Image 1 (cartoon, rainbow, N blue to C red):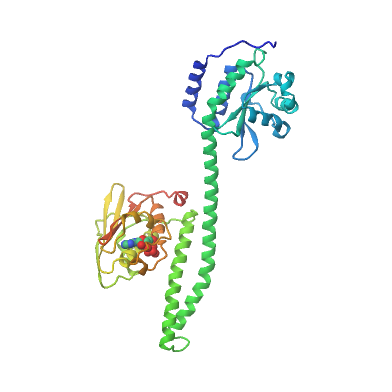
Image 2 (cartoon, rainbow, N blue to C red; image 1 turned 120 degrees about the vertical axis):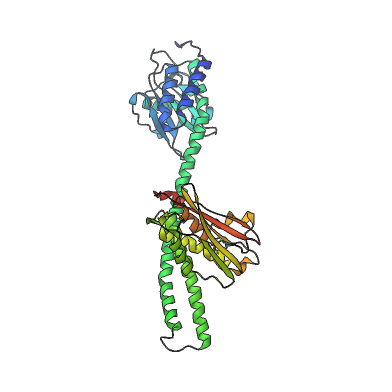
Length: 420
Ligand code: ADP
């Protein structure tokens, strides 16, 4: 018989202490040492270590040790013990390995393990899965007694309490890892889009330049047929250039590389500038109810002009005949601007889609309108860059209202938020 301590543990008391600690600390790496301390105190152990699986990989690493001690852990020298723990799902002591024949197959690796940690007992941890999530390791007892069955039982009980916390923690870690991968992929996509668009934009500019020379008949007069062809080249080329520019802007915003040049300004002149750049057909009445009383906003003037141009361009494009109205009103610390039209409208279920990017409502009617389907997605990002919102309300056949908000107070731009 070993001089086992015949101690029976007060599980009710331990459960109270454990849940009190968890409620106080939550789950994060900073609480590993506190968990260990509580368990080591309950066991009367001199020290303890927490070993956990690192990420989704196969390796195990020391995550916390009591009393500021450091151990270098070489899992490859004790792999058989680790496999045993994973398979048997129960605790084990150094003495058991030394003295009980059933543990002889893991004797060398087991003794290596306990030697590395100068430990006497350990218990495997699982995070709600079959796969070993970690190991709790404990040093000799303060009263020099052996770890007996009651100690192993209480260690296993603590390991079971840890399981849901570990599961949450491992899931959170996995999510964080995936998010990092997604961020990296998105940055790569933005970078590639920016590079590719730049590469395409440069030769396109010279195509357009030469087409203009031809159109202006600088190299000599053109036949009517040739004039029509050159006009087609110019038309198509300009559309392509607009799409490429929108793609570059989108990629820059997503990569957080679109510097905002913030100033305070009146919206009236910005709206006029945008109107100069678009073609409203003769069948559309324009009503603007911005005036000198409309408060000034803070933002990037060029970006706001681009948002106006996009919304007005769309209003004109999707309103074969009718009215386009621009109005604005104060909403708390923001100015809410509305661009409304009496055009073809948008079905309710399609409304969230139109801001997704590369989206065009496909119906017999809208197929006749050309566009890459990126303008609203870009405008939304631009407004969000100002801490504002852009959204739409619409009724098919009756028209659409596009709203966006801009700050009335100075703003701080937090770039990385744009990419989200
Ligand atoms: P596009 O370049 O295709 O116009 P947008 O991102 O500007 O791309 O718009 C996405 C889609 O939203 C459009 O294809 C169109 O179906 C719909 N849409 C946008 N503005 C309006 C509007 N004022 N009225 C009706 N439909 C609109």
